[in-house]
Image (spheres, helix red, strand yellow):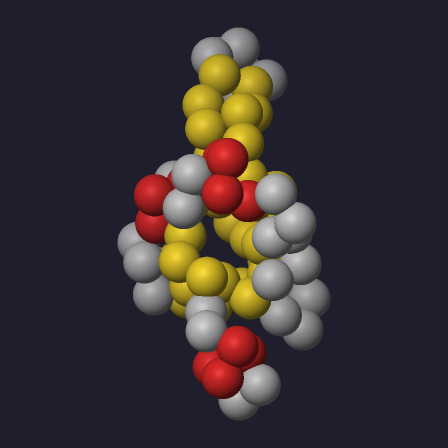
Length: 71
């Protein structure tokens, strides 16, 4: 998924293909690492029931079909 494809996608269930985890997309786009001050395109995901967010690359984010979201 690219940053341009995420308009209106925040809050949607997605699969992180890098870890095979399913989570809620919180944000996807540029992010500046406070330690290195380098900017990266990242996706912030969190577990559906709440918990610790994790980062992944935007290319690893795949929206789940509506049928899988209901399961």
